[in-house]
Amino acid sequence: MAKVFMSVLGTSEYVPAKYEMKGKISPPTPFVQEAYLHLTKDMWGKNDRIIIFLTPEARKKNWESGFFNEGYQGLYERLKKLNLPAEISAIDFKNGSTEEEIMENFLTIVKNLKEDDEVVFDITHSFRSLPMLTLVALIYAGTLKNIKTTGIYYGAFEVLGHPTYVKKNIPVEKRIAPIFDLTPYAHLIEWTFAVDEFLKYGMVERLHELIKDKVNPILKETKGKDQKARAVRDLAQTLKNLVMNIYTCRCTKIEEIRLEKIFSNLSEGDFMPPFVPLAQKVRDKIQPFASEDPWQKGLAAVEWCIEHNLIQQGYTILEEAAISEVGRIMGVENISEDKDERGFVSSLLSVTAQKKPPEKWSGILSERKEEAKRWQKIGGDAFSELAKEFNKLADIRNDINHCGCREEPINPNELKKKLSQLYKNIKERMENFREHLSNENK
Image (cartoon, rainbow, N blue to C red; front, side):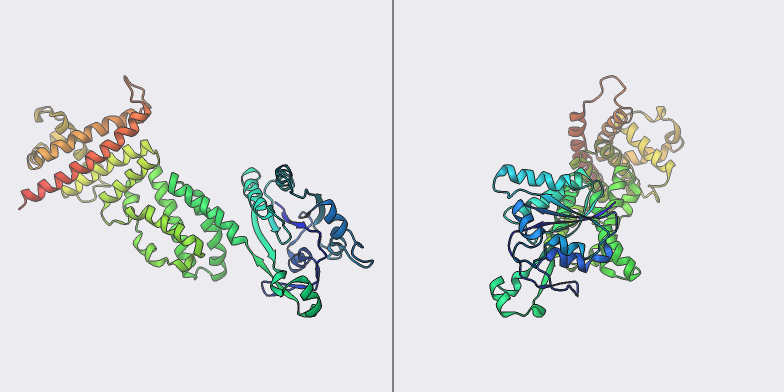
């Protein structure tokens, strides 16, 4: 892994100025590239690279020495005097006057990046379409070569005024121009992609990693005491836990998720302003899991599975959540953890759907026959209708879990369609069952 500084050199005769960045001020120089590298000289090592892109005209005027006057020092001579251990390269660049030249410049930027590079790009003298081209090239190289953009900077000489005015009216010692850090805006694109992945596909890995990269240095520096960073970190970990629990059908863990404290600890001030609407979309996405009702959380997980094509998980979670909910309605404690009680509820739903007479019951139902018959009677038609839908669900889950290795397996499109319908039906039948029991108890 190497650090790489990239910049484009222009053709103008630049006016010397000092440049300020993060409270540090460079010596006077016509070149913002020299100023930046001077201010960051301690971060460059022998395996790092400094790459300056330049057209033939820029090479002649500003890379080499002596063009504007006999004592004029070009950028290459000035960079050598910094005695940086990093390799310095001048790479030929096109003017970008045609679409073909723009594409060639794009490919040149990418070509000069290596696998796992960490890139700082100075865009001060990037002309025409080049700032946008640079950003796209860095995003592209991020995927192609796993490069990481660690900095995008702009030397804002123009805050001092027009170069002619500055040269005539402001002494060199008082010419202090800021170097703007535009890196957060590049990172915002990464955040946007990550949030988009989460919203559209339920994939949380990139979002989790970005949040971790943002808050871990803060938590390390503050020894874990920064409350805003902790709140953002907790959100990231909760998102990851939620998605992993859905992937792996951990119903009890889904029921245990608590979002209220996380939501209350977050504020708009925890994010840069453009990210606030994205953060709100993330919040809206997981809002259904904020319910205190474990059945509602189970339903939210099934909706998630339907939306993101997690078909097998959807059937499994719906079946197991239904067993848990019927058990809770029956007053069973710790239904999520009691294997025997779950077996009782599941078997009762199965024989009820099949209309199997009590004399043919076996196993736990035969041992608790009177209790089972009592629940059939109390539940009435509402329980029978719920049982029918549950039985369909269990049969399809077996089809999936056995990889369709049976007669007349269901095709994938039908599996997705049936999951949506069963979700709707079981949700409705469960509500009817609850309502029936409520009326019976009046």
